[in-house]
Image (cartoon, chains in turn yellow, blue):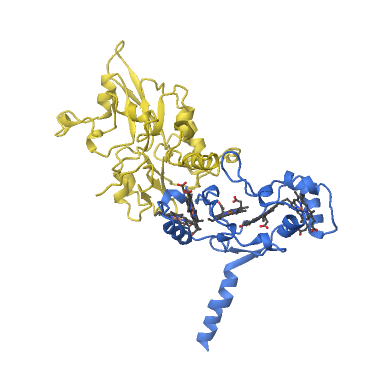
Length: 265
Length: 166
């Protein structure tokens, strides 16, 4: 499998020591991307997590020790936009691809046939299947935006790093005579990043020396989820707590590849 | 004979059945505004400060001149009575309509002529009939994906799916 290299590489670095687990990022994501809360066929009961759509999901992690050593951490999980995505080669109809500058993995809903191979392939559970046509409670339909298109029943969807915000930033750049390939970092920020009250998420172009993400990702406290799978996510997590870092490359004790886990360039 | 009949259906009848004809809410003459009233295209079709495209002018813009009928033109009368006085935006039909899942950027195509992609309404006194495909709901003039892609390929512009889809 060959992978393309891009001039721009969008990505995030999430500081898990700053994340309070408040969930503002999840709410911002749902609203920004027209994600329906839950169908009436589920009796509007969003507790069935096999049916909800959460492009960004906050997980809770615990160190397993009793009080007073007990500690928790929260981990927001968007789509990792892997450099070597597992979902792309398994798609039989090329509905998902990693071929655009910026390296965001695309998902083209009208092409998707709903086979869900990509969901099985993704180790991060970042992909979701629409079991129903989207339905919005009365009043909420007025908050829908034209920026992300409606996904019908039977297709898979996932986080796009709010790709439409990138499009908007490029339009602004063309208007202001700025090079669309060299945007200032704060011009393009996904909704979750803007919403985070703790400033835990940093977003930018890893290849742009003026953006801060490149430096952060190289910190000794930065890791990628399940690094040993070599999918090379474009999302990094930072923590100064060793138990948190250890959990990011979660494997069973005695696993053959356990020892060589850790970071790959 | 049967062949001629079926060809007839295929060439003339089916294309007509496939498309339903629609008219703009009322006739809007570009020459009346550009040539007679001396307006420029950018008075009505302009980019906002953030680079997004304003598309059609708002009712407020039209009402600068049409708060009350200026002529005895029946289309103007209809426009003033049904929209200006009721404060209702005009539901224009876009000949170059694109489906919900397509992203298009006017500012990225600023180097091209409007007529590379649009019917030349700027020269038409009568707004043309709008043909809507009964199956897809698209306009007959909706640019097909291969047409966008061909021009992108000719100009060395990326044809990655996410360039045009959202």
